[in-house]
Length: 357
Image 1 (tube, rainbow, N blue to C red):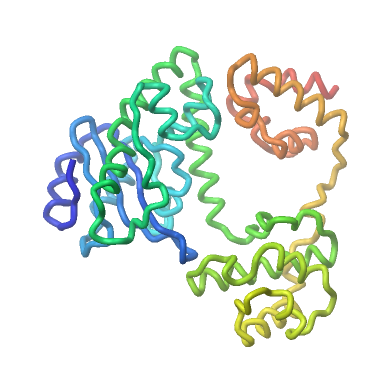
Image 2 (cartoon, rainbow, N blue to C red; image 1 turned 90 degrees about the vertical axis):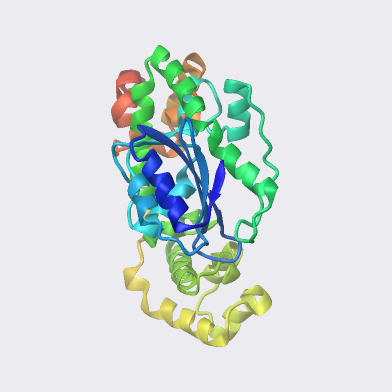
């Protein structure tokens, strides 16, 4: 186990592991005061070597990215969504050949959101500390406890993955997990598109027509401005303030200022937002995007939901993994979705179709 802070050490390490079939990967970053995550550490482990690479040192990371993006090398990770976001931001792409142990664990009886500490203890009887979860990873020098935490995140990851894979193969579900991990990569690429980030604004789906259009525009402006200034989006306007603005008609800049607490927007920014609202409505998605075209009957939703619940108990796979509320709605409305493809189609489609006929 060692910390890499110099180019020569990194080059030697990368050369030593370049022929590995799989590596464990994790990252540590900060995002408290910024819109974009700030990469601080990358941890890499093989069956025989572990290193933490200090990304805040003046070292060239291109060799590291080449390793991580090598399609021939399997990357073992746990709950890797945020890691993939960082990889995308730094490389304009997401590495292939990923095995996410959190995703995989859901197919052998664990919760779909099982934590790494819990999973390690239940599968390998290995106990680790997670006291540094909220640590400031940008502070230097790194404390001993931080380094121990970082090493722990990858030290047993390959062994954990192998244990889970053995059980998946026994249950004939390994291909299901491979499909899920591939879907995760595609999903993360889609999430990099901020054009529909407004859907995450709390309370926005209760709005209709003009109010909805206004809220969408304010959310869009907030996202672009937060990215431009590299600050958290809620440092500009909170979600509840977006809803308040949307519910008022023909707001003047002065009235809008009164709805935004703590004077977080400068006067010129409020004027900019006001102009943005006035001239951007033609580019706003209609409310029909939220109010789905085909009405979904409550009886159909109940039937599909109850069926997925019974199958989840039978298969010991959480219901959320089989299908979310949105997946069920898409299926009932004959829209493309998870329940219409891959392993779910083979496992569930016939029964689901019989339910609705």
